[in-house]
Image (cartoon, rainbow, N blue to C red; front, side, top):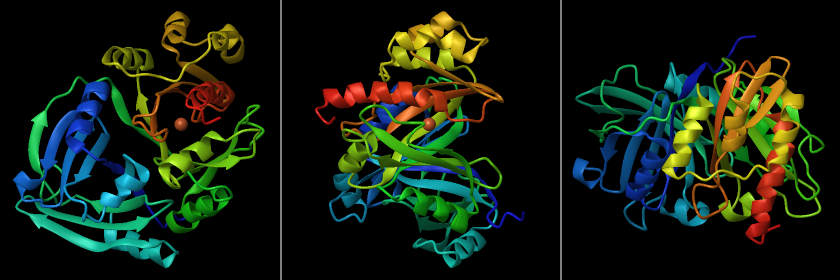
Length: 361
Ligand code: FE2
């Protein structure tokens, strides 16, 4: 079937934060990003400061408002530090915007051309769940480091082997999952890839439902969760509570060597969700032979899951800010294109132990 919305991939993920200078230090110290560009008062940008971080194909932009009257200052007081924009690289921005809005997307920014001595950038944006937007961007005619207004500011980081964004998960309100799956299908030509029912991913106390949509080219995978009924508060409800509504729950970053990446994260001070030792007792039985050193896997708390196509290794960080909202996943794929279905139960039990510690279970 004809792909009416040929998205090339994720160009960048932008976070609104209260203090971009300090958030940049966290991301560089923990994940080893290079700082590549900066925009702010010193570059003639009057209303916000932004830092562009890069590691292989992962590009994060951290932005903070200077003053309370900034249109996005409310974003941080409402949601805390979090993802504002998941930007898609496209061939033709005007076409993508026209097509998406004609198919029902709400406009966030009309097609705009930005220009400086380095060339021309085309941008437009649409709204998705919560206050998250998708920018369409084309930088084919631009030689600059990021966007007009940014200056190059290169400070190398201690690369930990993050290669690209594997998937980005959104939490939406109860009953909202189908609506947002349909949004991605209708507006952006995504297809439903996998569906997890609450039987697959429920524990005694907490449940959720999840569907994964992926774009026509298969490069962009966006799981969408909604809470399901459990005996106690679902972890998705906790997120919605603290995020004040829907938003990005976690970003999975792909590595080619999960053991090395996680070792470096540990030594940088990253904290991960607790995995009980009992998880590893039946692991060889559950996943069979794997190439990695089982002892190292167990010591680092890495989870393993197998399906028809192969296996994957994954680990989840604790939340990256005080609010129990956004966290990260590190993932290595060995043939599997799944999302760790077999680990859902183990993970949720681990998450709930922490939710209980915060008095929210
Ligand atoms: Fe994930």
